[in-house]
Image (cartoon, rainbow, N blue to C red; front, side, top):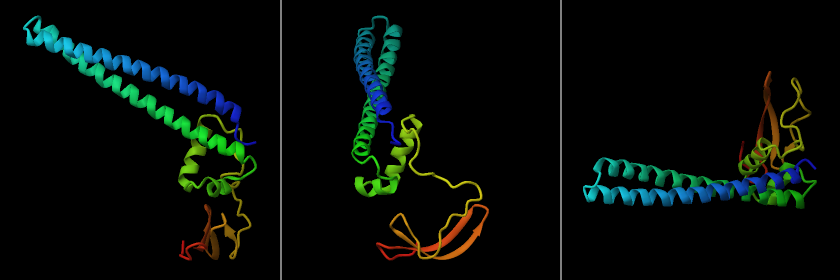
Length: 179
């Protein structure tokens, strides 16, 4: 299977632990910041060590902001790995399906699927891609007018070709519109 589920599960578990720890540290920093902010305001209000009170207030504001940011990042990390878990579960359920069919099966837009696969690849979760992303240099392929790409685009005519590949006029078989 081209998606390494064992590696994903191990990485997802580590990332979730890191998200929880980051969230807890963020919450602690947020609470300490609120406490420092309150102490600083009281010190300034009572004219008791005003300079120290101002510094304590500034420190409290900074700690509150950093705590909130840490909690926000922890939540984002948790959500990202939860989404990757959903992808992994679907991939486990559909082990032989190529990415083009996964798009249809998962009901995701192509960009979402591509980003999930790219993120998995960057995280080291893909052992190999199921199909080559790019042809070999100089590979012209066997495409011809009349062929249907990804079950959606029917090639009509070759418009031109060069060092970077071929350009075809095509129509979307679902909408009938040109692409």
